Length: 547
Ligand code: GLC
Image 1 (cartoon, rainbow, N blue to C red):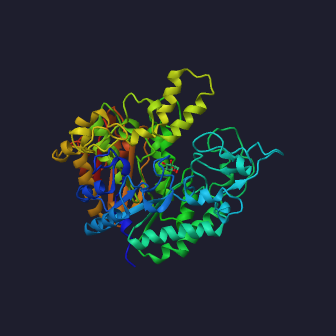
Image 2: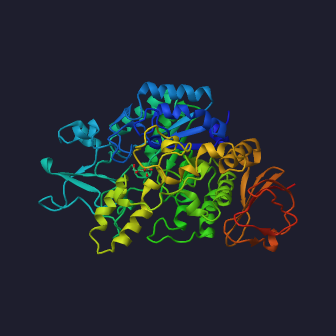
Image 3: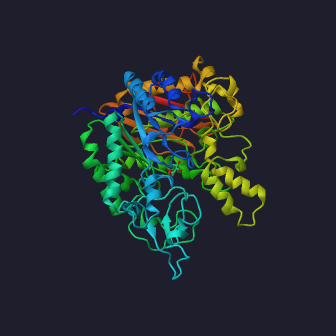
């Protein structure tokens, strides 16, 4: 049997709202995406993942779907989408969609119908009576992943509905076979159109095993032990495979699986629930979950990624996406943006699995400077704002906490050139402001510069695809301490070593690594040499062919 395309591919994530606006309304759209397919092809991309483009009130910017069979009018029409598939096919590019199946929008006709307890749609969602006799207390103490109670009361019918995210995103009831059938119909609809697969949103939370109180006092995601990766969850995912995916030979199903361990993820791959999954451990080694920016702990960051490389048969490594802050200020350095951006690219693109990159990562886009969370377009920040108001916090601290979590940082418009709105839109008013650094950081400047981050990504992606050992080889850790990262990729007699100094300081190689002998085939300094010097300069990274 032919190997799936994803075994030798790099996936590029597009956040459609911010990628390219073709009609000057300040919002990205599908014709805009079509106009950039040649750019992606040239970069060496084979698979594109589109964040949700379905009809949606955009409360969570598309992760709240009101019609799975229609395209959000701001982005275009179903005809535009069909044309995107056609144009992608001409260029041998595959399109993966976002499958948001844990919840719908509260404007979805199913939910509106479910407000009538006698409707068959009532059981499409999770409706419960309140806990106390007068029903004024939620059914349990679960909290939403965006903070606050996970239940909302509807007076007219004296019942509560569950939402693990915002109240505008009611959870579907996966215990109801009709819901499973509906999701299968959606998957089949798009696969039969020629879509290559799905990135499955919060896919480890869909099946709630019980509705008992959750443990602990943590104000976010309390109750998880009653639904995360439940037995029923595994059954549901496997059913989607048996009923639908199995009919499409070459396809890709990647899961968003926050909190998953290597063993749990591997079991899902072996059981054919997913082809690969996104782990969340490596993002915990800097400031993301804390208030104050903290220095990156390189060892923790590296070990988290290595843990999945060693123990999972096929990985989906990533550094950025639409929920994460940008990687250079996060894992690299503003003092060495080009060197560190390139070092991170090498770390990511030499790993085992199918690497995912996020729009703008290839040019080193950054977070919003002096961000004001009050203006945030992120529903999570709007909710957190109200929660934090209940605590006696200094405004500066409150602002810092919100800024740390604001997902707008990753969502500013793509920077194509130095014209109005960075070439993203012909309008000077965009749905989210363009990052003011767009005159220095944009595709046009970097495209003609052989030393740019963009040119580096391009060369490295092509190299990865040509070198069998880089896409097919096994992963082998080479133990190091501190800011040094080292690993090998091995395929029969061939072995390549990746050596990275992820710090602003020069690092002398330890004795164990002093005798590396081979040819430097790729590096981020023009004169990297592994034989004459034992020093690795700030963020120096080399790929060495061990002969
Ligand atoms: C996922 C998405 C995120 C969204 C959430 C709720 O984590 O990546 O953007 O807000 O699910 O759908």
